[in-house]
Amino acid sequence: MFLPGKILLNPIAISLNAKEVAGHFVWGLVAGAATFRVKYALLGGSFAVLIDSDHLIALLQTEAIPRMSHSIIFAAISAIVLMAIFGRRDYILGTIAATSVATHISYDIFNGGSGFPLFTPFLNSILSFPKMDWIFFEIAAIIIIAVVTFLVKRKEFAEKQKVSQK
Image 1 (tube, helix red, strand yellow):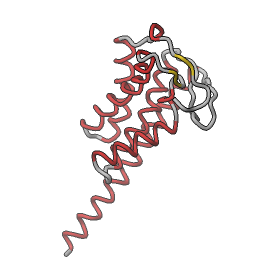
Image 2: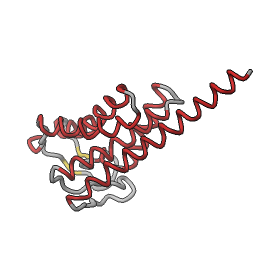
Image 3: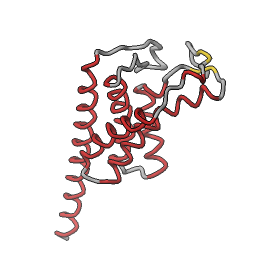
Image 4: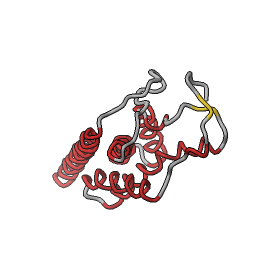
């Protein structure tokens, strides 16, 4: 609300429908599946859908930067907050939260979505992507999740090995 470029959003313009909810969920679910855990796959799908909760700001008739939850800063803040609330060492949860922005944007691009304020609040401009770029966002999310999952599992395995050697 205090950032430059805020506008009064139109609550009538909210275009959240079953197809969009299902699409975001599936895109997040696919990326979350890279953890090989149902819990994180379902969280990935849920988080990707919840990113559109910024549409609720329009219902409050509040001035705001449109689509602010579609930014890198939002991804970082959501990861930090969720890890602080649910487990400081749950790096997979933080990764799922952060990459949900990428999976969400991926589906928006696939579905013909418009631009995104990726660098809000530091740079309040909209970046547009060609329709085929959806795949890059989705693959990036999958790779990031897979790498973090691998590193966490490797660390857990090493810790178990140390305990069993003692």
